[in-house]
Length: 132
Length: 240
Image (cartoon, rainbow over all chains, first blue to last red; front, side, top):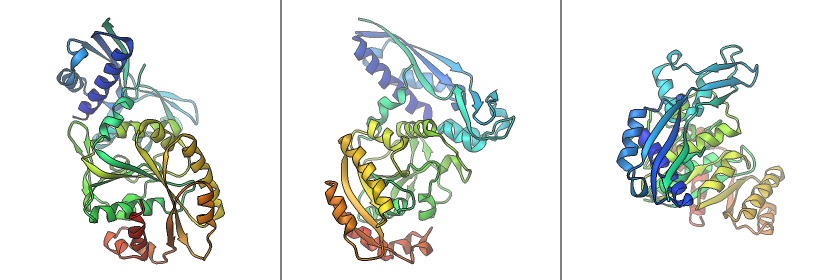
C-alpha cells in the first residue's frame, strides 16, 4: 500500500490548489501516473476515495497513465520501458524509488546506464476543477 | 502539472523533534562515520532516533554499521526497519550493491520520493547523512524541510575548510540553522579551524583526534562504540 502515501500527497496538493483558487468545492482532480513506477491504479483510486475530505468530498478522480520513455544520454537512443525483461524484485525496487532503474536498466543499444526518463516517471497532479 | 509529493514532506516529518543534516563541503572527512556513531550513541542514551543515508550514489552507513538483510515494511508508505535501537533508512534496500549513477535531477527525485513516502515514527532525532557539497540533496532539504539544522564536519585540512566556508555561506544566506562545526581527524596541535570557525560566526563544537584503529571497527558496532572516536562523539553530543 505504498500507493496510500502517494494518494495522501495528491490529496494534500489538490487541497492546496483548491485553497489557492478559492474553490468552495472541488469537482474533478486529474492525475497522471507514470508507467515506470508501476502504480496499481485500483489501489491508488481506493486510497484517494478513502482519504478525500472537506472540499474534495465529492470530487471525481481521473487517472491517466503515461508510458515510460527513456533516452540514452550517451548515444541518444530512445526506448520504451519494458518491465517483462526485469526480475520481479527489480520491478518492485523501481516501484518504490524509480531512480534505482539506473542500477538495473541499460540502454538497449549501447549498454549505458546514463539515461533520462523523458516521460512516465511518477505521479503528477494535472488539474483541479471546482466551483467558487 | 504539479508534483504532489512536495506538499506532504513536512507532514511526514512532523513527529520528529530535531532533524539534523550531517554535512560537509568535501568527501572523506568522516560525515558518515560521525552520523552513524552519533545515531548509535543517541539510541543507547534512550532517545528515539532515525538515521537516513542520503548519499544515494555512494551510500556507506550500512557498511559502517554492518547492516545486512534488513528490509522496510510497506504499510501506507514505507516503514523503516529497526537497527540497533534506531530506525534506519537507505537506498541500498532498493539498489543493493549495484552502481547507481544518478544525475542531479535524479538525486532530487529520489530524495523527494523517499521524504514523501517514508513514515518515520515519533522521533527525538532524525540524523541525515548527507552527500558532500552543496548539490541537489542539500538544496532540496533547504527548500523542503522546514526545521532542518546542519552540523558541519571538516578535517584540519585547509582544503576541506575552504569548502566549509562555501557551505556555511550558503546556509547563512538561506537563514538555515547551523549547529556548528566538528573538526575530525585531528592529528596535530593547531587552533586554526577553531579560530576560522568563529570568524565565520559559527559555533566550534569540538575536535576528534585521528583514530588509527577505526578502520578495524567497520561493520562492527560494538567495536566502533569502544573507540576513542566514539568516546569523543559522545562528549560532543552534549553540545549538539
